[in-house]
Amino acid sequence: MFDAQCDLAALVYDKGQDPDAILRDFAGDLGARGFRAVGMVQAGQCADSSLSAVLLPSGEKVLLAQDFDPNARGCRLDLARLQNAGERIVYEIEAGADLVIINRFGKRERDGKGLAYVIDRALDAHVPVVIAVASESFADWDKFADGMSIRLACERGALDRWWRSASIREPGGDQPRRSNRL
Image 1 (spheres, rainbow, N blue to C red):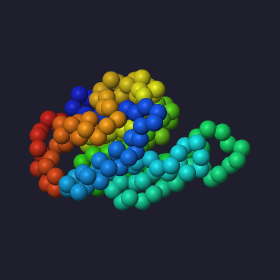
Image 2: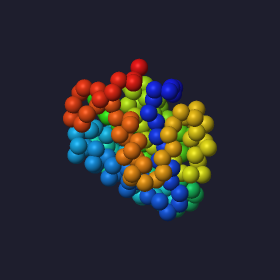
Image 3: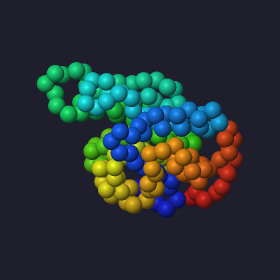
């Protein structure tokens, strides 16, 4: 699944930090510079029925929460909606991508489900991936990634520095900037 040539980064956040705003702004800035970021950025909260995501590059907002159930406890993620969003991201990867952004590493991804297959597809296509990972889940993430990822502080500067080393082409062009890919 992972090898030394893969560019995989975890944007590690603590409570009170907003990885979504950082990822959303980063994707927008990349697009303005001619890069194609695909994936999704979380919007809304897991603890209520507002859990949704913004698909990249379209900007379409998709609901990820189950229909409201007042008796439900915890995260009410609709797995069919998540799967549908994942399939749409894979389609965008196949259409050509410079970067894949995944909104969260959660228990489903930890168990090899959720959007884990999207990460695999991106890395198989030699497309760098960045994913938001809660600090309390980093040990699970590190195990999932076989230790083959870069840990980034939840700040834009860290993400920008990683991107400069991970991007493989000049913005708006098809020619590789460097050729360390297999």
